Picture (spheres, helix red, strand yellow):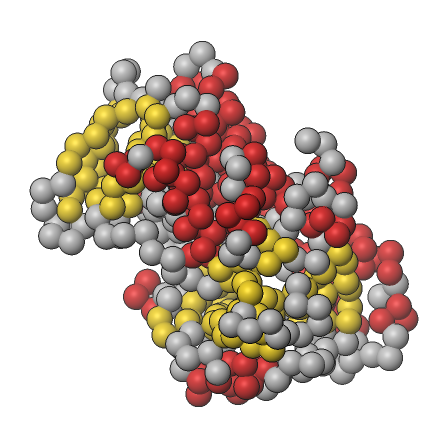
Length: 413
C-alpha cells in the first residue's frame, strides 16, 4: 500500500511516520518551498505525546521543549480560579510538553527524513487536482514557485492534511465559504524572559472575550530565563466580517496589542515589558469551521485542521491531529481494503472531533474562568464562595473526558 499525504504540518508528518512504522509507504507533498520551523508556542497533551513516544521521539522532544508541570486558570486580575498538575506530575505515563510549534514540527520532520528518506517529503508542490478510480488515486502537482511543471503521483489513498484552507476539503465542499471567525483577534509572540513560578507552569488569565496566556516553551539563554510564549486574545470585531486570508499571520504592532494587554495582571510577570521585548510577533484571527457531514470520499479523506479546525482552546489542535494519524494508521494496517479503513476512520474520529469543536466554541475547560468572572466580574476574596470546587471541577473534567485525556483514559494504554 502507498499513501499520498497533502500537507507537511504536524498531522501530515505524524501520519507519514506512523504509516512507515506499520509498513505502509507514504510521500508528503508540501506547498511551501521548505518545511521551516515557524509559529510560536503550543501545548501537546499526554494522549498525543504517548503516540510520539511510541515512535521513539521522546528524547528529541525533551531536548527542545518544557515538560509542563502545572496549569493555572486565573481571572484577569491574577486571582486563581483553578489549578491542576499536568503530565507526569498528574500521574500520566508521559509528559505534557510546552513547545515551539516549529520545533515540534521539526522533530517529526527530521524523523521522517531519517526513516523514510529525503525524497519522502516533496516541497514546493501545489496540489492542482486529483482523480480516483477502482485501483487508486492520481494526484497532479504544479511547481508552487513557478506555477508550472510539477509532477504526477499515484497511490492507493490520498489524505488531505493541508490545514484550515485545505484544497482537498474545498474539492468536495466548494461552497463551504471562509473559516468561521468568533470576533477574537490573537497576538502571539515569544521572548527570552526571567523564570516565573517554577519555570514549568502555564497560566491562562481571563475568559473567551479577553484572555492572556503565558508559558515557557524552551530553555532560555541563561539558567534564570526561559523562552516564554505569550498570547493576548481580545474580541475586537464583528464575527460576520472575518479578516481576509491575507490578514492571517501578519506582523503585529505594539500600538494595537498593548492597550489590550493592560487589562491583565499576573503576579510576578511584567506583561507589557515582556511583549515590548519580544521583537516581531504575530497577529491571527481566531477561526474554525463547522464540522463536516463526512471526511471520506472513497480513497480520499481528511486529517487534522483540514478535517476539524478548532479554536485554540484546551491545547487540543495539534494533539487531535496526532490522534487522527494514529487511528488512521492502525485501521489501514488491519483493513481488508483501504476504502474500508478510511470509512472506519471517519466513523471513529469525526464525531469525537466535532464534539471538541463545539466545546471549544463555548470555551472548553477555560469556560470555568468565564463562569467565575460572570459571577464576580470585579474579582473575589474567596473563589469557593463564588463557585464551589465541585462545580469548577465538573467544568474542567468534562472537557478532559470528551477530548480523551482524562486520568482514566491516559491510564488505559
